[in-house]
Every structure is written in structure tokens, then in C-alpha cells.
Image 1: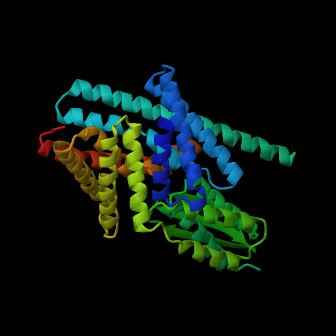
Image 2 (image 1 turned 90 degrees about the vertical axis):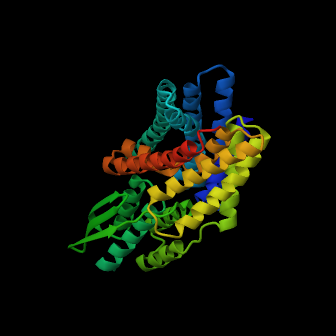
Image 3 (image 1 turned 90 degrees about the horizontal axis):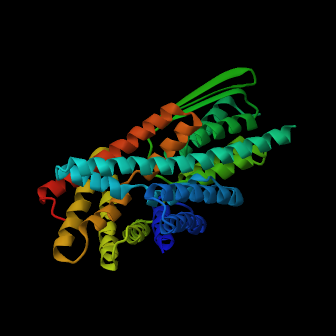
Amino acid sequence: MSGLYAFLASLGFAVLFNVPKNRLFYAGLAGGIGGSVYGFALYCGSSETIALLYASISLSMVSEIMARLLRCPSTMFLISALIPFVPGGGAYYTVLSIIEKNNELALHYGLSVIAQAGAIVLGCVLVTGAFAMIRSFEIHRHKA
Amino acid sequence: MVEHDTLARTVTKAGMILLENGAETNRVEDTMQRLCKAYGATIVDTYATPTLLIVSFTLNGQLVHNIKRIHIQSTNLARIDAVNSLSRQACAGLLSCQQLDEKLDEVKAYRPYSIPARILGASVCTFGFALFFHGTLPDAICSFVIGAVVQAFMIMLNRYHISAVFRNILGGALLSGLSVTASRFIPVTGSTVSISVLMLLVPGLAITNAIRDSVNGDLVAGLARGLESILTAISIAVGSGFILLLLGGGL
């Protein structure tokens, strides 16, 4: 189910970022796949942070593959798909706890936000790096 | 034969469109470099940060430089896609420099989605978020409405030249004010609604580009975009935190 919800959220963002009409669906799809992986990982009992890592890896891979198939920048899918996973909720509770003068809770939320953001970044970087490596291998082979 | 001036202006225009509409630094530099080489320039150097564009090349033995100050505007990925495919065509030798320049002007004139479409997009988005954050159906419907209001407000503010920080403070204040008020009168969870609508203002593009730029080794651009996203996040927090304080943090 979280896949469907993430699909809706990514689709909405794709409109806000002016993704061309014929590619709106694909941008939503990348988010949806990330959401399904995230939901499945949580269901299998992995922690929030690890689930986000899996989601981020899967949606970056999907975006890169779609970018190659449809011959357009991968940014188009990646940005819309990545946004639902930004730990906005954690950041909100951090600020809320600071306002309520509950510093321990604020620290707890703040640290988990940093860990989650790190997990998303790591997943994205791993996949982008791997695809850049494949591309440079291909270019070398053409030259040889 | 391509004139120096024409090539320099056209290439800078392509780079400017890419940068203004949210492309990552690597793509901007790479596209400009390819275009220059496609039209016969040698010793090409390009440099881009979120605020500045520099291109330098040698054509027919003459050294040419061009510098452009950039003001990043709204995100329009359709324009980036269009420039990308134009650059492919130009590198394949299908476009003369003159034609490319005319096509770039057409891309510049691309309209974004209409205002109702953008407001609807924002509502669908917040609706999805509310359910994604384990909200109930009333939460989602409430987010749908507040999302539309906040997006309309942000579109209105975008018409005036107000600094981004102040805009985000106002946006954050409006969204938390509305969702706390709503949670007082109808049975919805104030925090879930707030978080869902909050995601509209989150600087997703700046964060993603900051990461990609830093990883690609464009450290100056990465730092600038990182600072942009941190500033935005802080201003949203200030806006909504202020309202929560005023309303007694009642959730």
C-alpha cells in the first residue's frame, strides 16, 4: 500500500517540477517502486534507516534505467521520486520537541533524521556512481 | 563558418536555461563543452556554479570568453529535457548554430503547467503523503485542502520579489497555523497534516542536486546548494515553530 501512496506523492511533485506530460507516469512509478520496497523492508522487520537505504537504492536504479530507455536526464525521475523519503516528519518532531523544551527527545529525533538522510544519500550515491562507472567502461570499449 | 560571438552567445544561452531550471552542475558544464566542440571550437573550458557561468574556447585561432550571471528560478524539468535533446541533435551535426539559437528561444518560451494544474498537483501530493505517513482518511482529505491553499499562497508570493527565506517562513507559518486550527475543530491529527503539507516546501531539488554535485566533485556548487537547502529547512521550521509557540503547541 505504501507504494501506491508514494506513487501519488511523486506524481504530485512531478507536476510541480514541470515534468513533461508523457513522462509524469514514469516519475510517479519510480516513487511507487521505492515506496513498495520501503514498505516491504519494514514488513520484513528491518529498521527504518535500512528500509530507507533499500528504497533509495531501488528508486535510483529505476530512474537511471528509465532515463536510458527514454533517453532523457535521470534527474527528471530521481528528484520527484526521492522527495517522499526525505525525513520531513522526523525534522518536524525535532523542532516540536525543541519548542516543548524536551531536549532529550529532540536529540533522539534529530539523530534519527541525520541517520535517515544519510541512508538516502548513500543509496543514491552508490547507484549513481555505479552507473557512471558502467558508462565510462562503455566509452573506453568504444575507443579501443 | 560559425562566428565567435554567435557560438559564445548560443552556448551560454543553453547553459543558462539548464542552470536556471534546476540541472546539476555536471550536466551544464558537459553540455556546454559538447556544444562548443560540435561547432569546431578547440581548447574548451566551462565552469558553472548556481550563480555564475563561464565559458572559454578557441575558434579559428581566436580566444573567446563569455561570463553570465545566473538567477536560479523555478524548476522546469521539461526545459532541461528539451535542451538535452537539442544538444544531442547538435552534436550529431543536424543543427546549424543559427537553428540551435532559434530552438533555444522556443525552449525558453515553454510555459509551466497552469496554476490550477499545479494546485491540483500539490493537493494530490499532500494527499499521498498523509496516507504514506500512516494518516487516516480524514487526515488525508484535510491535507488535500490545506495543500491546495498553501500552494496557491506560495504561487501568489512567487509573483513578488520577496527573498526565499521570508517566503518560506510565511509558508511554514500558514501551514502549521491552518493544520493546528483544523485539528481543533475536526477530528484529524494535527501533526500528520502538518508534516504532509510541510513536504511541499521541503527543498527536494536543492538537496538532491547538492548531493549529486558534491559527489561529482563540484564542491563549490555542492556547498552553495547545500546551504540553500539548509536555509530553506531552517526558515520553514522558524515559521511553523513560531505559530506552534503562539498557539501553545496544542496538537
